[in-house]
Length: 177
Image (cartoon, rainbow, N blue to C red; front, side, top):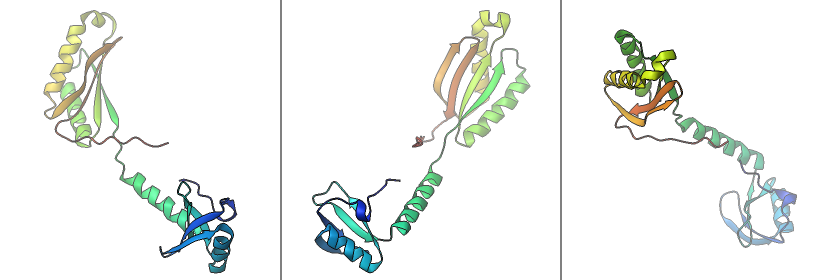
């Protein structure tokens, strides 16, 4: 939330003043605008400091901050976060175990997440990387609706790839922090 200058923090000689109901009062001296705000029991809040002359509005500042905070909270609720879920395989995995993990991956894809498949090779398995690539391809045959986002890559003793649900329009939001 952006911090606005209010009341005595406003240091310009003239302001374009807007009433609490949205009607324009015209260009007033800052001291006259402050007196008008105090007379009505409101705050003078600078809305557009870059304008010539700057624009200020007569409002209840605490109420304005409360509504801005509530609006930000509602916007945060609407953001859909996409997570990357991991599935770990090995070269010697049994077919039934592979099917169970494929069902789990389908569940993740149905929820809208991406799935990272990691195949770990131990010891002598690392010398036969092509078996790992075949295992991943076999695993993908058990997942009907998928799209490869990041193809298979070997990183040390892991072969990894990332898949997502096929045909869905992906909306990635970055969290502003």
